[in-house]
Length: 390
Image (cartoon, rainbow, N blue to C red; front, side, top):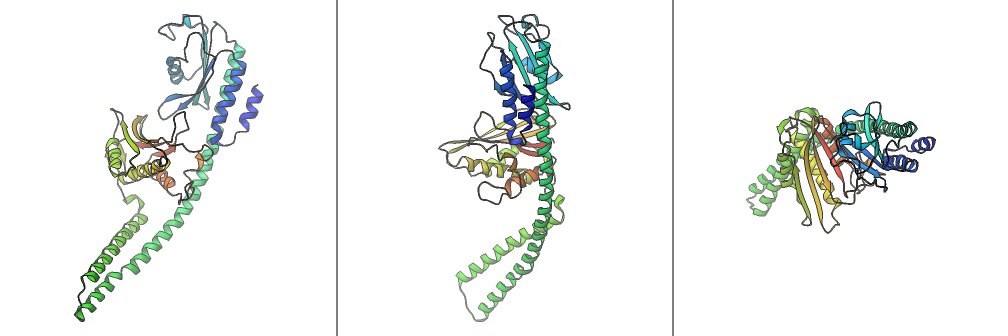
């Protein structure tokens, strides 16, 4: 069975197939065990465990596995073996205590000191799990941990190559943008002179036309707007660090600002959820609001065909950072393409594919990050933007 697990897990070569890895370990563990099994994924950002699989065989005492078991695993990250739960009040004070004798084993899924999840089992008899059982379950957990580590390492390498390629592409884009701003300044800079000459000629021939005058003024105003944008772009390209110096701001202020600026269709409801103890963040406000506007626009597009949609903007502390989530109630993103969505020029909507790539780049520019949460039982898509505390 261990060989079968190794073979099946070895055939998984893409992070988008990770769910299959959990299913392999759960299926073989359930085949070997006669007890109740729960397999969880560790969410590093929130420091919590998310149930992935659970057996249908429930023990007489519905432990489920008790939250205190998971708390011990998260804190100690070591095996927890209890031969008789009715006698384990000192180690695991359960209230109410089990009605019948019961044994439990809980194992961390780890590799190279990093926690990826937990594997926990209960049985309705005491001293049910032998040393051989424990070794088997521990080996299954280790194989899953090493598989997740391998997939994440491969994904990190792929992303590194993509970033290098993107950097080269952006370099070319930057060069083209500089050339464009130069041409705009040279060519459009003459438009106001042309308009002045036209007005002078009209005046010379004693011609007066309010409509022509209005259109000439509008033309001059439009050209000035483009030239101002061109000047700003040139300054940013010359010194990218000069724009948007970091400020200290509350996440609620950021979310309320993008809420005001968002034009939601009538069928979509927006809800803001901010923890009471939320910390301020140190960010470049323009970059963050641009990221959030992009995520909200994608969320609106995902719910466009639904009769009713819910958009949730959520903010909470996560270790030494602050996380902001954008969640929609759409159909979600296909796991087969989830690892591609931040690639430059990749798009499923026929657009330029620049939005999510730019959003993640802007997050990284201010010591943050942006990623897509793994799919869960809840519908829709969740993007998490992690930002430094202020």
